[in-house]
Length: 353
Image (cartoon, rainbow, N blue to C red; front, side):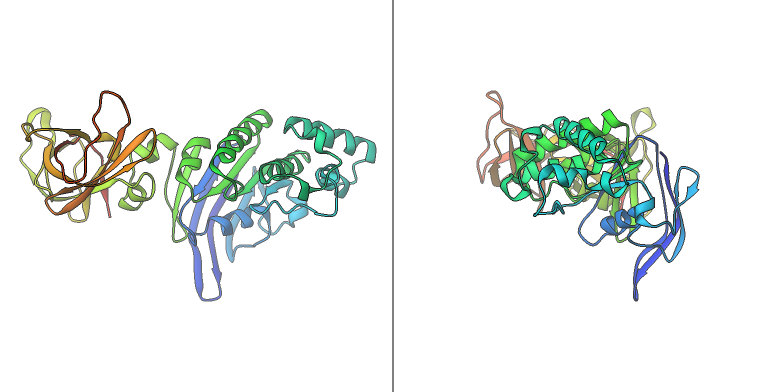
């Protein structure tokens, strides 16, 4: 089911949340709303669920205007961060709740609920109360309850944020597997960029009630359209463009940055407020002295061992550049205070503030 929001305006008192917001989610797509706290992600999700009505604008499910349609008539399944399970009811009764509200006969409701518990690997816990389950198991129950009613739209409000890293990874896989299996249009709210990049068909990066960029995960990461997206998704290094030099070979624009390095670009920078976005993992570290275009001298300020990677803060012309390198047997681990050469990609994207 395609979901469309058109010209949405909404305020809480004198605080404006959305101004002329448009959004289209394709049928069967998983869209992640990614952004910092207070950017409007959850408000948008609750508007889709029907808990909040926009001050103006329209919400469509396929061709149906559901802007003023009550929650219970929207055929929406919702999974909350805090599970929202009934503590005094069994796991099976929790999963059956939506079916009973829809007047499904008891025997049929029980059969469907048990089948759904099997899908999420919890059939042996059907008679237990939620309090006896782990956080990951309770979130599986919440997923089963949302899916058993066969919703047209599935909404997930930071459902994994209370779980540890291992469980988050496991449940991300389960969410994606079930979403694809059922083919349900899904909106996933998160402030965790790794979750959004891992699980999504499309990522909508939000800031202050606006969608700054919406694209495939790879595009959002590799080709950010603004400095905000570059910083928020992957925490890129931003090098201020000081001037544009005469075109070099192949007609590429040649850019002088604030760290005194010349980079090339097929993209013409806008006048003022333009930066080159350089991901930390695209920077190589070498010993010796700079010898080629795209190389800078620097000094290691700090080293952070992260297991699979090593993070460096490097001082270059009194600026800090973040560098991420893989932990391998062939690549040395540099030490604090060590002089190094940074090799930067010459084709990094240009973003505006």
